[in-house]
Length: 353
Image (cartoon, rainbow, N blue to C red; front, side, top):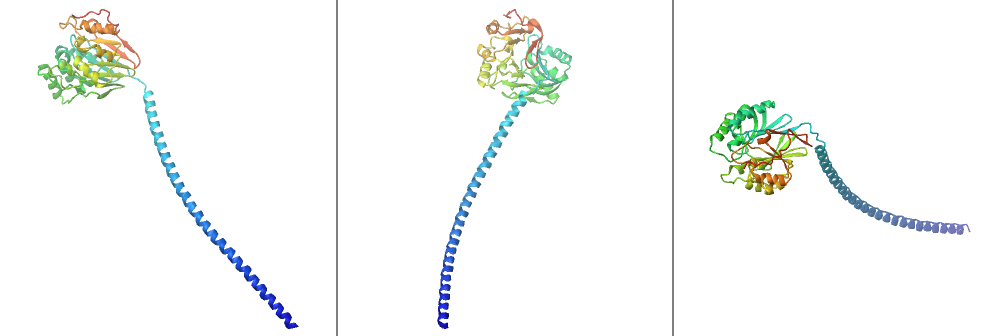
């Protein structure tokens, strides 16, 4: 009986062990499947994370590029704005003064801006000392620029005296030369003082204190033997005011200036070739559209300057005229906004014909 109880107890123990073994196996199976599932999900998560990183990298790179471009764009815009603001806030502290000297039948123009000065032409041979004394009276000891528009005597005759008496930084002469004593005197004086000649280049700009001038002629180097058309012309700007001077440039040179594309509009225009009808064409005047014109010529000159045709053009356009033959030296001052004159416009409209 005792043995039967032992056998039964042993059988129950074996069955229990088997049951626990099955349960353990099931647990292992379940645990193992869970591990595989977790490992697979981990790999999947890892791949997804990698993709996110790559997308994030691409996004970051794109963001950096966009930010860089934006910064560059902002820098450029700020630079342009600052430049515009600087230009807009420039305060003109100097006064521009343009003197059209009375040198008889010839041309001579002195331009000063603050401590800076330039001379365009110097009258005929007998005017050298006159021009020298006028400059000294204006307390000028040095000239930033000396321009001989062309080698005719009534424009460069007195220039050798000026170049000899004053320190000159830049001397501008056209390529065209003349085999005359007057021209050789100027060249010899330039050489004796070891100065160099600067040739005019259309569109070249130069500073004169707070003013600026641009070369507008000669446009061509092929005008044959016509010295007038090789004249050095400039457009001078000071603030909102402007001046245009073109020596003795005639119709052919004026046509070239019109075609060059250079700005020609000016408030004050020095009549070319002393008011000759061979210059100052209607087409050219339409481009310049000045409010004022200055005619430099000699009283009772033998050339009949200014010609009636030129005066008629000026009058029809409502241009106010000043004349050295009637009024002496014409002096115009600019504060960058307004122009003031030392005399009233001429009312005679009398030609020299």
